[in-house]
Image (tube, rainbow, N blue to C red; front, side, top):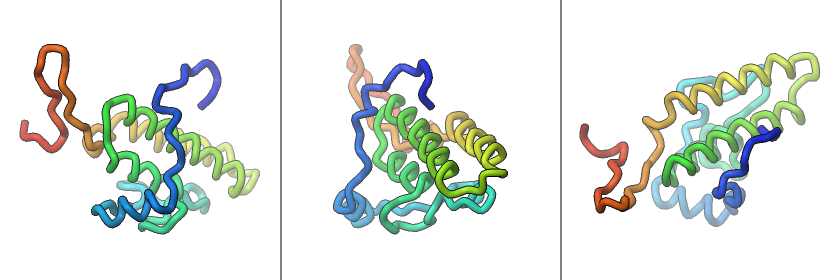
Amino acid sequence: MGGGREKLKSEVKSFPTQDEWNAATQAGFKSNGATMAPDSIYLTNIANGDNRYPPKPADLHDYRYWMGGDEEDRQFADHEFFDYMLNIIEQKSWRMIRPLARRRALKYYEAVRLLGYKFFRYKEKASDSGDEHRTNSSTE
């Protein structure tokens, strides 16, 4: 994203190693690619749609959502997803369709920002009052 965006403290996260990726898959993680969207943007693949390493943007986004955390972790995952899509578009897509592909990537980013909370694994943490935040797996 760049520009004047303030760095998130979680931006120190690194790309998962193959060992970390394998450990997650052994623990039950399964990427399904770009959930509710095509796995490519104008013929540029953004998802493997499975657990192959290295992950493509949608697979890495699935991994970050599966790992979970707090809202800042979710925001990081969404920004990383967008940045990674833009990177792949610049490297792999045809020059003439890059503007359209960037626009589609922005739509995917906007969708995960708007609806991603439903799929993110929020971790419980104690607040100052001693109450705990509810996770998306709790009943409402």
